[in-house]
Length: 96
Image (cartoon, rainbow, N blue to C red; front, side, top):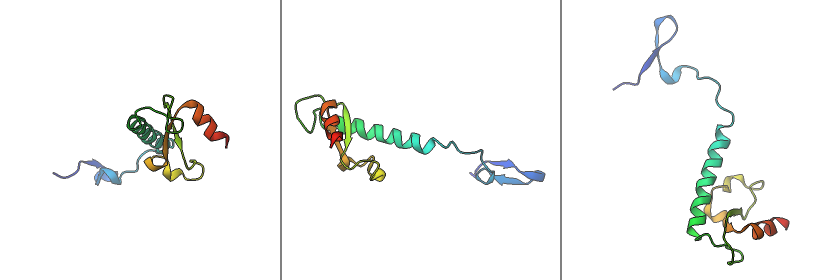
């Protein structure tokens, strides 16, 4: 089955993708990254059994990026750059 066509100028049919689309949502890539990061965070917290990887004593509620995102944004969803941490340890990690 051929892709659906829409009528173009002067009755000429153009493929759907050839028709200019309205301006893209500028926030879409940011939303996609945020969603991908939320999925990675949830997965990592489950894998760590919600136990802080730094102190081993408290409930891990947050995801710490070992290499900060302002240094390496491409590692945002990379599991090797994640640590499941409690709020206290996360605050301590960011003081250094």
